Image 1 (tube, rainbow, N blue to C red):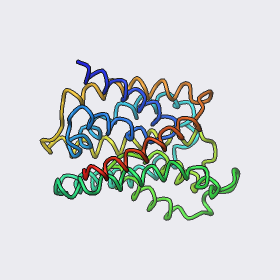
Image 2 (cartoon, one colour):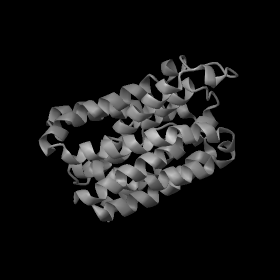
Image 3 (cartoon, rainbow, N blue to C red):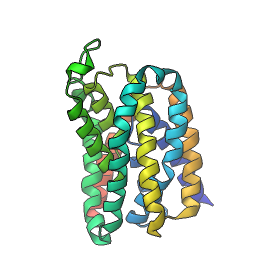
Length: 251
């Protein structure tokens, strides 16, 4: 029972973190490993369960989505394609290879989180006509982010916020709304592929779905008053420690 409580608490925190900034998988992934799930199954179980948090997170930002329907439609295709391909790559990756790659994936996601403020400096200034910008570049960035997200979801929120900034979305709350919808596309497509992997730990997956849903909605609703910097710093420090721990253990 204590293992389920650990996973539930971790998923609520992760759902809130994902709705606000991203990086929540850095909380649930190690929690699953901690309770005895092997890293590959932990990643697959996480991915299958993530969609509920994206649904409730997007719902919490629904008022801000009506202004960006055109951009949402434009980025739907790369999100779907990337999610499917990333999940397929995960399914065919040998267990030992994935274990070797885990520390680098965790560290990469952590670095993205740590550099968020610097990444945002490259965002376009509000009011510029996004039609004059290279939407092809934005399309490619979203596909690559979705590919990575289908393979290992940690950090895709920050990557998408940076991509949306390049597309001209400078309001963080509007960007978060779009990010949650696109995350839903990535998570559903990759999750459907991984359903047939035979590596989903269903008792934990159901607990994760509940926690992600609760955390996603709460995170979206309180985001305007939430101290994003403290959460990000906590996740960054935790991510660095995890990457080192996984590397030392030879996961």
